[in-house]
Image (cartoon, rainbow, N blue to C red; front, side, top):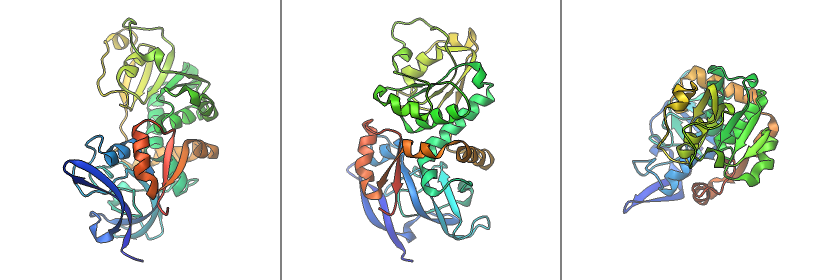
Length: 331
């Protein structure tokens, strides 16, 4: 097998990030116990920010981006993995501080890998990716806070995105009545196919002239937007309800009052997906393999090749992408 392979490479010139598809040498990969032949990867929002230089996701150059990948072990110095084993990876700073998966090959620490769960293959795992994994963590957090289908409606904000769309599917599979909130209401039919009982736009959650509390409606929520939307959402949660917050596409600042918390006992729960320990990480992936119907993958994912990644990154940053972009590294 040749030591050279294709990779998306980020370089900087005069403070400007330049991304291109290049031939890369395995000797330039960063240290790790396991080298993986990457079969499928994804293009996430964070990847798109790095590739376009829209945010300082990557701070050292040259760099190979890509926070997700799935494939088969080429070689390993760790006894847990043997050549040919199917594996996947999300998180751990891969694609940010450690060379990532938008390439035909990756070398990483064995502790960062997860064996491919039964019922998934590399393509389907990447249709889920960090976005779906994060969605599963959000659903589990709501359940941990005592939110059940009998508690009432749950809402997903930013439902048209990667995290939101899979959260809709998972919550519907678990028996919840799901309300999908999106700025792309033309996608109502698609969200209903994923399991949404109702699709609404974002306007009910933009604070505007409303008071410190709004009509209580939702027993739980997965918020993929942040900013004003999250502030408005908190006002609509029923007493004792919970919000799993995971997004910042709508802003990183939260301007609200204490009233949802001290008058209704609302719980705001942050969810992170980067450094989740192996046990909970594996459990979330097993749930995804079990609970996502096969048809969901085709509904949430669009396949592109490595040679399309740079152009697609600009589309993603501009908000013109629905669901997930799955990258076939052989193209």
